[in-house]
Every structure is written in C-alpha cells, then in structure tokens.
Length: 158
Image (cartoon, rainbow, N blue to C red; front, side):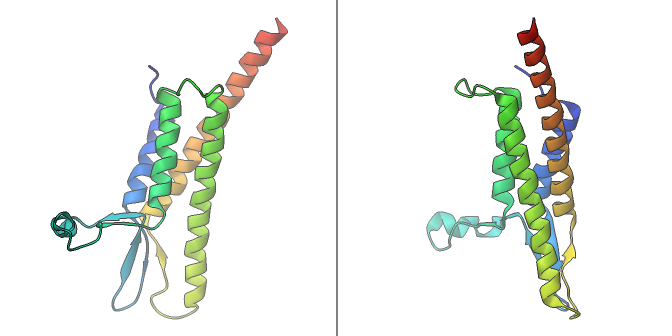
C-alpha cells in the first residue's frame, strides 16, 4: 500500500480543512459566514426525532470533499478497474482546481454585487486553504503523470 507524498498530504489536508472553514463573510451590522460545509450540531437531536431537516448545509464544500477523497483513493489504493490512475488523478485534480477557481469567482461576483455598500464580502481562510491545497494536488498530479509517462515511453523504447 502506497502512502501520501508530503505535498499530497499537505494539499489534501488543506482542502479538507478548508471545506469546513468559513469561505466568505458579508454583512455590516448582522454579518454572516458562507461555509463550504456547515454542520449544525445543535439541531442533530431534532433531526433524530424528525422535527428538523438534516442539519448539514452545503455551499460547495461537499464537492471539494468528494474530489479530494477520490484523489486520495487514487494515490493510496486505486481500484482495479482503473487502468491509468495517474491520468485519472490528473483529471480529478484539474476538476478540483477548476471548482476552487469557480468558488473564488463566486466570491468576486458577490463582492461586485455589493458595489460600494458597507458589508462587502471578504475572503476568509477556508477558501484560501482550498485554493492552495488544490494547487498543490494539481502540481503533484502533473509531476507524477509526467514521471509515469516518461517511464512508460522509456520502457517501450527498450
């Protein structure tokens, strides 16, 4: 069983932790935080009795968690039906980076919608962690895929 490279571990940790932290804060007097995945622990008891809906609110963090989990699975132990795990890791890393760029663009659009009004959305640590983590995972996927392709071409030449 393989283990995560240091950069892969840091990238995966940043994206997982970042999806649970606040992404943006907006509002002046009554501010609110937009969190990737918000778990409302206080309402779990009401959900168990059927009074309240499921207390997990998603603003894009579940996608980040799903893609990061898929990358970790492809690194540690790829399923047998996947013939080229490094290529799939690269594709999923590109999707993860694209989604993080989408979330930053969404923050920029929210800021533009406020204009010069007070309480304009500010970027928070969670979204920064996701962008840095997905960039690390993408960089590592590119390096790994290039190494695999190089070794395959060298093997075919012999």
